Image 1 (cartoon, rainbow, N blue to C red):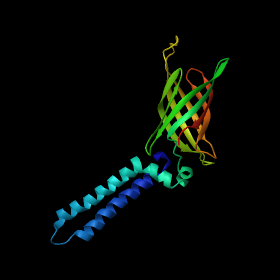
Image 2: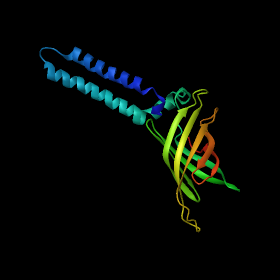
Image 3: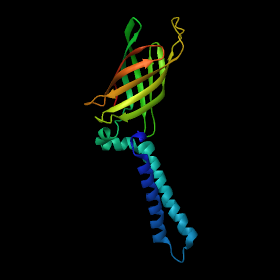
Image 4: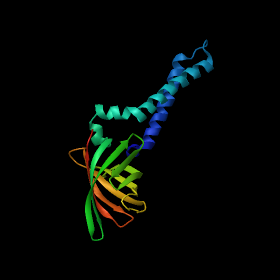
Length: 197
C-alpha cells in the first residue's frame, strides 16, 4: 500500500518534521546551565520517540487507523487481510473445470501476500502489488505466483508460474475477481469471497 502514496512528499514532510522537532526542543531547553551536549541529547530523544511512533503506525497502527477511518478503504486501498473462499475456473486446451480453494491474504502497510491452497496444489506469492485504476479509482491487485502441485494420486507435475489481475468489487471489499494466465498455457478466472473479516 505504501506504493500508492506520494513517497517523495512524505519523506520530505517527515524530514522537515524531524528537523523542526529537534530545533524546537533545542530552542526550549538550551540555556547556559544545561550545555549544548545535554540539549542535543534531549533533542535526539524526541526524534527517537517520533521515529518509534512512525514505526508503530506503519507496522501495527495502520490497521487500527483503517478500522477507525473507513474512508481510507476508498481513498487509499482496502484492508484485504483474511481467509477467502476461492473458486478457480480453469481451461487448458479442450479441457476445462472448476476447483475450490482457500486463499489467505496477509497485508500490512509495506507488503502484501496471497497464499492459495487447493486439494491438488499450493501456491505462494512472487509479487502482490496493490494499485488504483487511474480513471475509475477502483482497487486492483496485481498478483504473480508460483504453484506447486501436490505429489499424490500419481501427479508428477512440475511447479509453474502465473499472473492474475484481481479487481475489488465496487460495492463490497469482500469480493475479488479476475482472469489469470500461467506459463503452462492455462487460462481462467478467479472468484474470491472473504470468509472472515
